[in-house]
Image 1 (tube, rainbow, N blue to C red):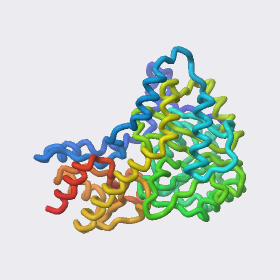
Image 2: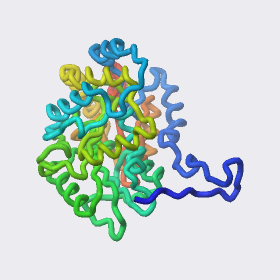
Image 3: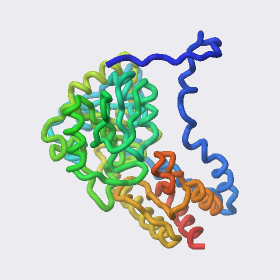
Length: 382
């Protein structure tokens, strides 16, 4: 696959005419909310920020203890992860995600999941002359990753023909950010089959996998989806949400051993390594199912309270079968809805951040504390 070319600036300058990459990127999505955030922060009872899916509950004690125990880490850690970590990843994916046939060769530790999402096309060699397919409503970083590699972004249902384009990478996300939609195994299987016919890689962002509410998420690592073969399939997982480890930057990529080996080689050259103490803490997070179930119960109750409050205030909730968000609308431009919430001291994310078809929706996270979620319900009731 070809390498990206570089745009040049007519203004020239210190970089010898090379256009700084940052100038080719869109505005950072949440910068659009600064004025609304300021308005919401003026509420007498303070700001309740439901625009981001940032965990607020304590990191499990088991994880903190393992981090402290691994703090004496003078040597360089392994790019792939320690033997103990890779074994814990394999066990986790089999136990919680229905993965079959995994070995150490199928898994890698990553520096959180966003790092890999943003760099996966580049690391796979999907650049100029290739297309990356992303869902019509999607995490913006899928598109950013394609832009960084020089690939073309094709938006829409990835089971549809991409025309004459050479498709290198197909993104899946279930449960979805922002909609919370959970895709059935049959749909996932069709996407995998479609991509394999075209020699493309399927990358499934499964970072919300532990949070299926009305439907059961299915992993692309499950034989029900991949037909018993991991060829051309990668799954991305994160400990940020399931184990309240967002500050640790702890992620996983797993799947096709040939692709994993290629990623490992690129990451060795680039020095993309999860720090040793974090690798130790990841083992505890992956093994602690009890902490995950406790967190699920917290989120489930917050989801119940917020959904009831939104519906009582006249909102319709679409999809939202999984993830940590409610996809809400009352049939008006999303920024009008954002302003309505800001008047009540609440910040939510406009749906058009995730694609034009989200122009009448907002994404409402239920990752605030119980007290703040109750405050939102009270404000909406008024």
